[in-house]
Amino acid sequence: MTLVRAVAIDLDALGDTSSLWNTWLASVADVLGVDPGALSLNRAEAASELDRLGAGNWRALLERYCEEHAAVHLRRDATTSAALRTLAASGSAIGVFTDAPEPLARVALAQVGAERRASAVETGTGALGRLLVALGDDAVVVRSRTELLEAIADA
Image 1 (tube, rainbow, N blue to C red):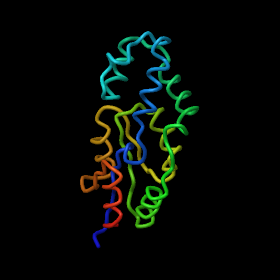
Image 2 (image 1 turned 120 degrees about the vertical axis):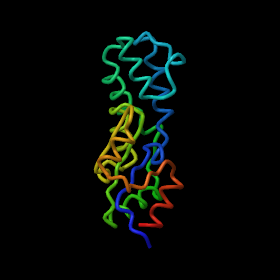
Image 3 (image 1 turned 30 degrees about the horizontal axis):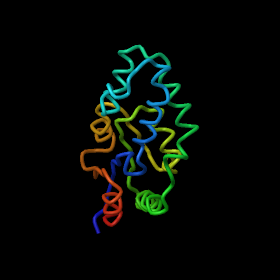
Image 4 (image 1 turned 90 degrees about the vertical axis):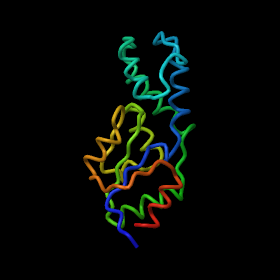
């Protein structure tokens, strides 16, 4: 058995956050004066576009929305939770990365029960690269739930 020293997990491998982001965008489109369809599908780029458009306090609105609606979009999964516990028990450093803005990522991690397990979280543009600098080049990159389950087989 190979020891997995560190693992970098895509947030969406723990729970699909895209519907939370998309419903938030739709709910604040009129308030912020933006057309969600005109924004980039990459959430880091969309966040930059919101900043450029002067969309005011969009981060605070996103955080509040996520806190109120995350339970509708994200559920804890026993298998995923067990995989994270296994990695942590084996001494593996666990990091999470996402293109989503930080308020969404923080609330989503709490909702899926992974905030205690993640020693590092990187969000936005270049998140994976920054996380790999923190975890080390030998970190296993996990982009799906299936890859997460494969990583614990090596832990």
